[in-house]
Image (cartoon, rainbow, N blue to C red):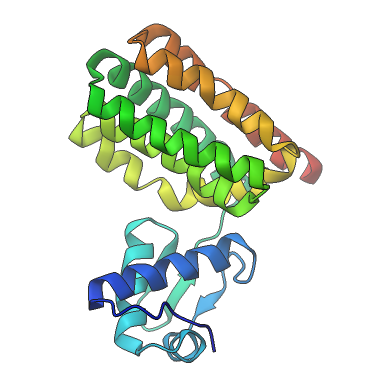
Length: 220
């Protein structure tokens, strides 16, 4: 049985914490793409109720990391070669637009939010925590989109969160040196915070599509 936090948590907090643990297991490969997530098994594993697991899975559905199939249950999403290509195109498109808008509208609060995520990204890189690095990589871009202030763009990007996490997991071996991840994000942070919209756009639209090609190339 997994150990849950000892502190007393409200049900929404417990559901969110459980969702984070399931997400970590998916990114660590404990659950593979296409695996069925059985509520009772998860409840026994984490030492929580099935209703808590049900709520946790809703968080993961909202992030499009888990899909519910009527009369069959919950499954980890599957990423095909075509999905890899489409995810790369969508990430480049949405993240570059978000970077441009964020640079145009950046506030001191927005700068502080982005700097905090970047600092956490650096800490994970220096600690060699690959899983945390993947999560913070996506969180950085998600924060950029949120700082951009476009509700429609934010809603579109939310639908990409789960697939993008698995994409980053599949691309992880392409960046054996964690410092490379820092080097990719630091200029983007600087461009956004300084209000250089066109530079931010160009920097955000740079490496995802080549990564997709490198992911699928061995299978060709």
